[in-house]
Amino acid sequence: MGGRWLFSLENVMADRGISATANIGRSNLRGDIVGLLITSGIAIFLFLFHGEVWALTTIGLMAAVILDRVVNLVADGKSKEGGIGIVCELITIGPVIGILRLG
Image (cartoon, helix red, strand yellow):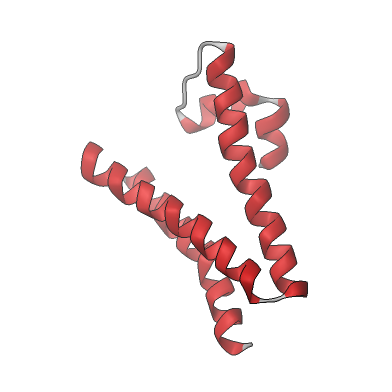
């Protein structure tokens, strides 16, 4: 998924219902979304090998995304896609919290 954001943004925008008609919009999508995905991936990798501070980084990033999705649900109304997004983030954050509590 992350590579698609970098190299075929038009296909991803069509799949996700996102519209960025100018270069600044495309740049913002790539910077924000890919930056979040790459940062989360690096933090999870570092957590596995270098300790819990990196788990807290990952949990913080994912919690911010979940909060944003909840705000979107409140502002825009309930939607299947919004609910699926929250579930995906919880699936991502769950194992990190589980490993942190076990360790």
